[in-house]
Every structure is written in C-alpha cells, then in structure tokens.
Length: 133
Ligand SMILES: [Zn+2]
Image (cartoon, rainbow, N blue to C red; front, side, top):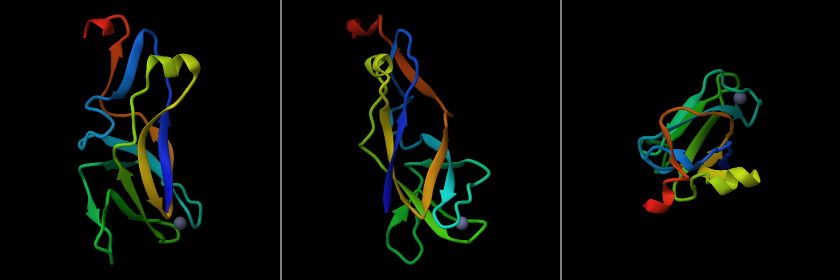
C-alpha cells in the first residue's frame, strides 16, 4: 500500500483558499486522474474519476474502495481508496511562497495516480473582502 497526496499550486492574484466548491472532502466532488499500472507501467488512456461518496466492494475482502479496476494490458487488479481529512485549501500565502497545498490523500494498491486533471467546480475567496467575514 502506498499513499499519494495530491498537491496543488496555482498563481492566486488577490485570491485565497482555492479548493473544490464544497471543500476537499466533499462526498460529491470527483477527482480525475490517470492511473499507471504498478506491474507493467501501462498508463490508462482516459482519466478515471474517484468520488468520496461512491464506493465499491473490494473482491475477496470486506472492505470498500473508491476505485477498483483491472489493467487492460496485464490484468493486474488495483484499488484507489480516498482518505478524507488530510487536505486543506491553497492559500494566497502558499501561492506567494510557491508552496503546494495537499488536497486529498489516496491509498493506492497496484496503481499509481498520474496526470491529475482540474475539473468540476472550484472556489476561491477574495483577499480583499476577507477581513469583513
Ligand atoms: Zn498492467
């Protein structure tokens, strides 16, 4: 089992707290990325999507996971399980100092996530209006 932390960065001009619209742990927010097979190195052609609120049972196990798939090339099976509670939004300070913010943790077996794609609805707050809240 290998944990992968999805890290993001962006240039935020007068903006802060960039994150998925309802937060990193929104059960309906989908993260899109490609997966690379840990055995043969084949990278999936299309992006896969994982959503915290959508789980599938792991075969021959009592557990559940967010993604279970078989490599088309070598037929190795792998899972990607999301671990909530580890992410935080990207702040203006991160952006200024070139830091990355961790969004979501993925517990990967048999696969390695590659090529994360920004999709779905994201939000950020204005730096200027922030002190009023
Ligand atoms: Zn493979």
